[in-house]
Image (cartoon, rainbow, N blue to C red; front, top):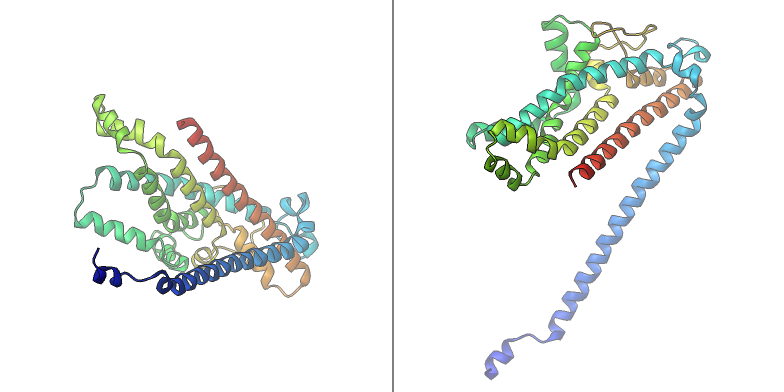
Length: 299
């Protein structure tokens, strides 16, 4: 090596300040990330503590079995809880087959052209649209144009539109994660494309599809703006018995109690939030369990 080439190589002292600066920058970023995470956990813990302190004592059989009332001591969540379950059931019936079917078509059948890419782009954009926009669409399309009125079916169809992009995106990711070797093995055994999708791809992707669907339904349970927009009632003193009955749901009942000036109703709202959180945590736990079972079955 010549003297000129040796002189062109920087010494270690030249790089040492840059290494020190990068090391301190890394530690600073790490500290900010940990601080942000802890702040989020502290705020969540404080919120849950406040809610459970006020609302846990309100949750009992009387609270779950009584209808809403203008007298705080007699008020309960029965109609709102049943309305949420009715709406959730019909939302799943509508959104699940449509979402999974769209995902199967886009991943396994659709050609790679501008139309398919345009559809995929719009589905991704629809996943980020504010929920109140879906409420306005449901009001104009289902309540007024189809003349369904402010019933369970109209609310379920509106919420199905809300979560449909989420189910499609989650299902596509689950289907895309299936190895191509499984598809090629099915074709090698003489399977048609539909047989390959039905017997190979869907069983392998079922865990991810169910997880995404349950998490999307959990979001639908907690949404208020679309249902207020279509005109779901804030006071219902009877059980909804079908898809064409008027209804209310847990978030709307909680909103109604919070808006009242009496402190007793604020405690009832906290109790309603506790029930809603239990429903959401149950749904999330079910999603984790189903994903675990599906992965164990595939192994």
